[in-house]
Image (cartoon, rainbow, N blue to C red; front, side, top):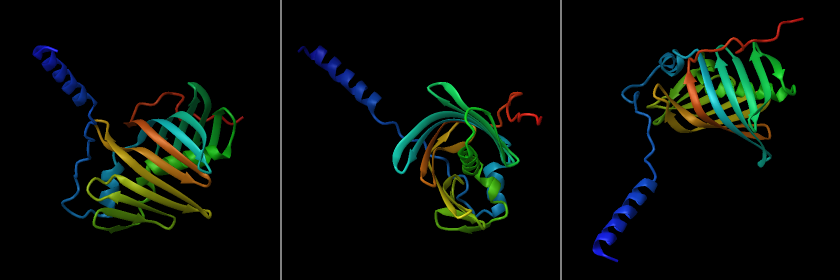
Length: 226
């Protein structure tokens, strides 16, 4: 091999390794490390400017630690307590339902009370601050902890991103853990949520989370009573 060809080969190999090297993960900026925040400040900074969130998700479902189902979903979450969720399998709409005023409205697909459980826990997991305004705040070295009678959440002290949440209601225990923070250009959010509920584990991959999107006429539109 000629020297010129050898140098070209080495240069090409270097470019290949640089391209294949793992990219450094982005890290949320430590915006709140300078002072201790009050509960009102934590709630305000976390979600005061958010009325609606739209999530595009992949949801992997396990039951008894075995693969159970996989769905794609488009989820609209609106305070206080409203969910509009469209679930797809192989690109086909299989469920379309709304939770509003604690009532379930199934627009298409099979009616299943588990839909209400999933929708409500997605709301609690993503719109977490909506349930803690009357809680008690305590601080540890690296995290804030907010507690109410039936729930507890741990927040990163410097970013206010959630780390884990525990909910106890009607003798049931629900654990939510938060992973892989990303920045959509407007705000930071955990892109992977793991929700443990009864015998199920829902791994919710937030492929996109949009703050205060425009909604269509059919969004949150419940059937008229006959």
